[in-house]
Image 1 (tube, rainbow, N blue to C red):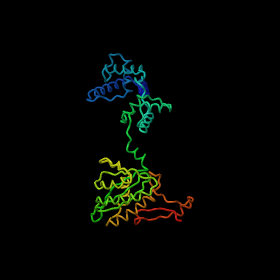
Image 2: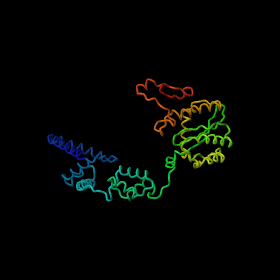
Image 3: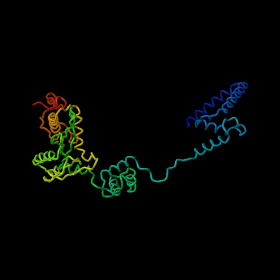
Image 4: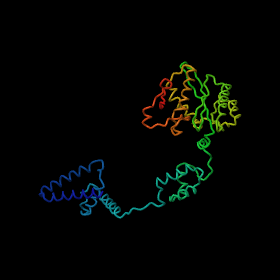
Length: 357
């Protein structure tokens, strides 16, 4: 604003110098023209748009003209005086800090929320103490305020074990199962039952049928239970939803092996996220790109894909290794590049790459 005011003053001074060098008749004619333009401007319905520099110049110029000549301005004397009072007030106004404590910085706020989320059973004092040990001074009252604003609820109260923490802590001893359906070209619906180990992501294909009766489901449970006896560490939990096809006889087979049954809540697919993720994977990578004509064709496709899923496909949750990694040849990068071979599965739908012996 100061630069704009100086520019306006300099321009007006140059105009004044140029006006002094003109003749008296020319000055009087110019004054008549300017007064006529001012009268036209006053007849306009809208108010003229003034910038801060224009207001400052007119207010300063009014101090050098007598009050009787203020009629030459196109604004009222009250407006000029109000502009002058604003200039004086702005000149003698100093910046003041708002009352209260200074606001918490964004980095400190994010750190408080991070510590609270990672330690849901820690109270306000505990979180403040953790930060104080890192030379970050935050009061317990501030921690409480930040947590309430973030909707994290009151800290310091005993927090229950979340479902995610429960799964991570017991993944080694947990098994999940689920059904998914496949429609054939002849509009026959086939039901596929599978099991997946939560820690290794290894998938066990139980079977597929058009009529998943209680006896069929119980027999598939027995077949899997017999194969699980060879495990080094026994399983303790089986997760499945409340599907009516998973009968009490199905659960009794696993209870007899010392495995507890955990039923997921109603309409909560995330509670069985490992099984749901596998269903999405096998559909996107295999079943959505095939025409299924019969149950035998579906069983063959599922068997090949499960072999690929367990023995070759890299998994992000396992550090980009498969559940059952195959032994690799110890070769240099150049030797590997020259001996990589591709193997087509399911008619070229899936490619597997390996090093030729």
